[in-house]
Every structure is written in C-alpha cells, then in structure tokens.
Image 1 (cartoon, helix red, strand yellow):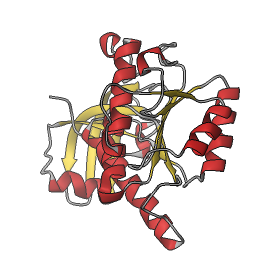
Image 2: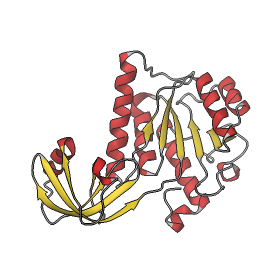
Image 3: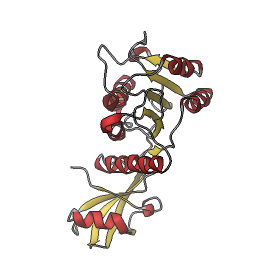
Image 4: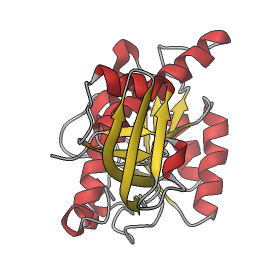
Length: 255
C-alpha cells in the first residue's frame, strides 16, 4: 500500500537523514488518522517535491518524519476548464480530474451556467474548489496539488485559449456535436506537451461560445457515442488522453 501524504513546505529542501517537523492542520490530520511512530509517510510540498520517511514522533500538534528518500513528481501540464454546474457536479468533476493527474483547473462562467459565482460567494466557492482539490490530491497520493484559477468569462477564456495555442499548447473543447472524435484530436502529442480540455455546463456550450473558442485556436471534439454529464466529461477525456498517449503504460505520470 502506498504511504499516506501530508503537506509540508519542508519537503522541498529535505534530504535523506533530515528530520522534518509538521505542525498545524496537517499534524492534527495525522493525529486523527492515528499515525504512529514507525509508520511510513510521504511529505509533499504541493508543487511536486516528495520526501519519504518514517514517523519518529507523533502527537496532536506535531509530526516528525525522518526522511530516507526524496523525489519529484514531474506531472505533465494538463488543464481542465470546467464550467460551473448545478448539484455539485462541477466539484465532482474537479475531484476526479485531480485523481487522474490534472495540474490546473479553470472555473468557467459559460452562458448556460445555472450556478453563479458573484461577490463574496465567488471567493467562497473558489476556496471550496481548492479544498476539494487538495483533499483529492492527498487521497490519490500526489505530490503536486492542482492550482485553481479565478473564474473566467467566455471572452476571457477565448483570450486565454489564444495565448495557450500561441505557446504551442493543444486545446480541446468537448462538444457532442463535434465531427471529430477525441481519438483524432490533438491529444497524441508528446506526453509532456501541455494539453487543455474545456467542458461546458449541463446545457451544453452555446454555438457562439464554441465558435469563439475555435476561432481562438481550440479544436472541438466529441468523447464518444454517448453524452456525458458535466461531472464525468472532463475526467473521461483525461483518462482517454492518458490511454492514447500511452503514459499509463510507461508510468511517466497521468499523462
């Protein structure tokens, strides 16, 4: 079984033989889990650094780990643009995407979104997404916690897509009406080539929005013969791309 993961800024500079102390919420979390001396755990900094070792002190306020190995999770860049969705389906999507290796999440206020982030609610909603992403990253034993950007409107997203395409990154808009299946979309590039997936709300992406994203350089593609919910479309695309790129075979990361 893989070792449980706890966040610690000290993981980045740790070397074999070092003892790293973890305090605050993470130490409390370890205490709630009843972690004890002698157990193996991983300390991660949320940016890819991992320090593996053995617990030498376990208490309600402090966890001390003696490091015996260090590594770095060099996850390929994968961005999920997730439209806001009702009934928590957007949160389900980002949790699953995190487990599958996404590195950045962009909330999108699409035209057909029923859910709205406004004012203080926007800050609270984004913080909720960050909490869910953190929990999912720890559950899946990741050393990198995906960033959650601020909410984008469609014009802002189109400009962001144009900039990504100009950098040579592949952007795929998932749309059931697209003529091209995802297997033929630009997801077969080098495993480390940045890749974006854009997922609309449950009502679908409006025609003018799709046109603006394609004009910005995105490629529209469909996932398969069935229409997936907002909660499953992004994760399904991530899994499909991982299989198409062969990285689940080589073990070079989720992508």
